[in-house]
Image (cartoon, rainbow, N blue to C red; front, side, top):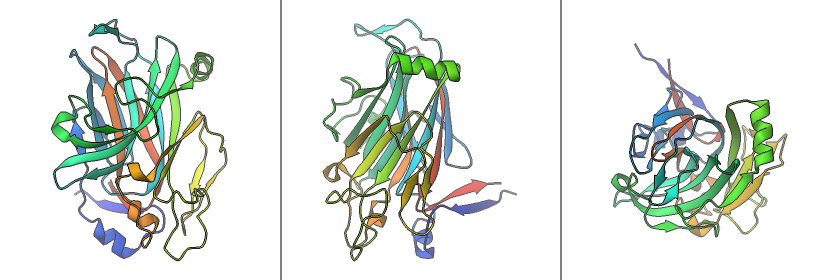
Amino acid sequence: MKMVKKILLGTLAVAAILSFAGCQRETAGNEDLIQVNSASSKASISYTNDGDSVTRGFKSLNTKHLDAICKIEMKVTDLVDKTVEGSKIVSNGTMGYIFNIVKGADEKYAFSIAGVRYNQSTGEVQAYVESFSGIEAAKLEDKLEGGVVATGLPNYGQSYGFTLLDKAAVDALLTANPGKITLWIDLVANGKASADATAYPQGRERAGKDGSYTVSFYATDPARKSSATNYDLTYTNPVALKTCYVEADNVNAKYDATKGLTSMQSDVGFYANVYAGQTLEGTWEFSEIKKEAEEIEE
């Protein structure tokens, strides 16, 4: 017999539990890319793309959440020498944190992605943060259409937004932990707890930016801690490699001042793309998930 229990993550009212009862995981693109374990907060990828074009997909957690931190571990695997449409492939692929996922009545998705890849040509780790809308699940495998840039970075597919770690920093990581690159991506929803709140919760102080997200990248665990009684966030190691913002007008879960941060609960999850001829291996692990609960099978 399969037993299922719920672990509550953060302050949670019974009504909130009931409102999300029976929610299902959102999945789009190549369903074979990402394997989510029974705890729902961890996933892995070990996929070889034998085709001649990129393959991509995402899977969300089972229920909607406000935000969380995600540990991504990329295994460094050999790069297959391959050129597609005149461009030489320089990476195995991308692992990302997909968030702010909203599925419309037209069955099209809107979402944001914070993605990282290891460029074996330059020896750098590169990253981007972007938002997209009007994406049909069936067409995710082909390309992301209708992209709306959230941070002023180049559109998806043109180039990565920025260098997260230069070659010297990557070499140091690989010396300390041979064969793998580990990063943390922290997502913070910004706003007040309620309409009558007079101050912003700790760690969410973007005055006048209610409904926005802060996305930070770390090379070491920032040791985020979410308060069990309110929306406060604290960090033991708060120095980020890079911080970006997804502003409120690019957010799909619209902020409602009368409801506060609760109105920003939406699907979050795992995103990957694998380049032609390449193998991508790695793991994701969410922690300090704020709001809602996940099911764990026993």
